[in-house]
Image (cartoon, rainbow, N blue to C red):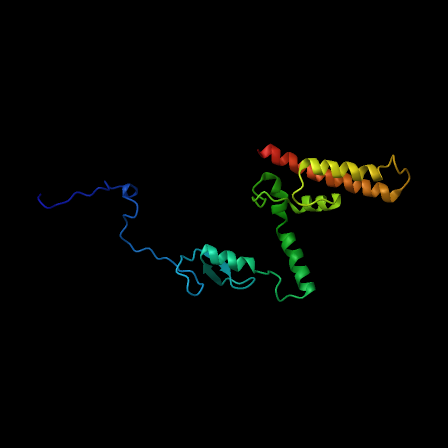
Length: 177
């Protein structure tokens, strides 16, 4: 038995060394002219098309930064497409409280942004600023301060709702950890 060499995989392929396979691995190169990086990020060539470009991460980010989903559509078509997208994706908005439906980047939801706008605050406002703005604005239109004023009562309800949306969002964030 001289010259025979014993295999080291013992019949279990997963025990082989990393890269021990002998087959060539095909790597798709970035579709950007002159780039030699692997193109592992697919990007649509046009809306609703199955054709894809395959870019490296750097060129995919550049491509997505300039992407306009509504390019070439008139106002009515863009509004109809936005309504359709919102209707079709409503399940994701409903599931946002589970944590997997959100963007994951720590940004505020659209409801929170509208609530901050009602209170006259920026997107990066903290809890103390929110509470302070709510108290100041609510004191001006409170029904006890302006009894019988329907516009003030409606404004107070709007402020209450905005504050409640922001308070519940903060509680959810604290609950998740």
